[in-house]
Image 1 (cartoon, helix red, strand yellow):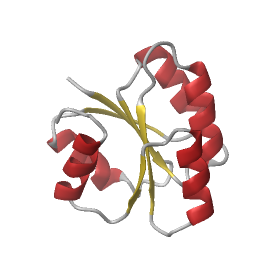
Image 2: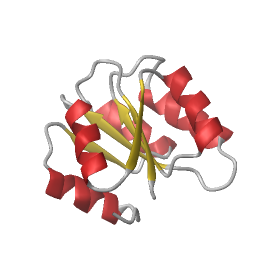
Image 3: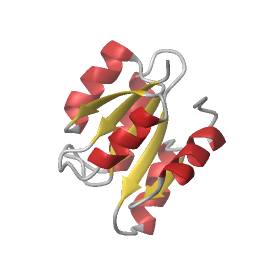
Amino acid sequence: MTKCLLIDDEGRGRYLGEMLSGLGLDTSLTSGADEAMRFCNDNSPDVVMLSARANGGAPKDFVKRLRMATRGKPPVVFLFAETPDTEMFGQSILEGAADVLMMPLDRDLLHFKLRQAGIAV
């Protein structure tokens, strides 16, 4: 089963977690970057969904830390946000994020984006 980590400290991604679980992903939730790094070190998720507003610094910094700390194949990282910030999005993608998901999104788009990134759902 594909393991997914959802990083969201404001609860706005709750329905995203429900959609991920509905698509068959084993989804876990953390509230900030430090907790997420510990989770990733212990559990090696296949996918990470990172809120643009998560505690612990800029999304690009988390993506960079994750890439440097990963043993083996790094997880596919998606950034999700409610408001557009092209600078933040661009920096996160340059550090290794696969894509940006603008909220709200529907199940079909989420399914498409996961498959586009090579995640079997």
